[in-house]
Image 1 (cartoon, rainbow, N blue to C red):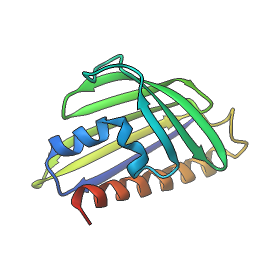
Image 2: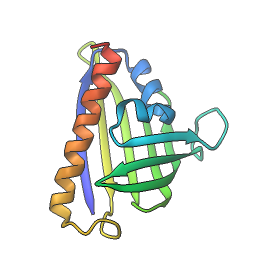
Image 3: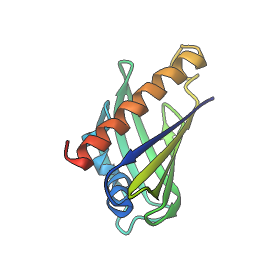
Image 4: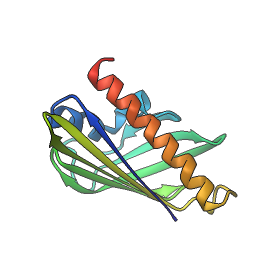
Length: 144
């Protein structure tokens, strides 16, 4: 089991940051390796909403259907894979912090079925990837 926690401060209002990261169709814009993400349920976003995502990681194509399992508008969204080659749960929280926004992401997953790499190495790779993604998010939302 892999568990990675990443925190990033973004110089934007919490509502703006949350709206952007909760719209999973934005994922290809700021997450390296995400090829496509598309909602499979209609608005409004809520517990039970689903989306499909196509990603590439370590040369493997990963196709995942996610379901929103927790949702607190402008504060928290938690998704879990319901159909995937890489079982994963992602929790994103947003909170005001010194006039900016602190985003905390927890990624939990089990890569043992897909990747024949030891868990500690895989954890480091996932952590590096998530940190890079959130740096990209920060640059995008701050217009840098």
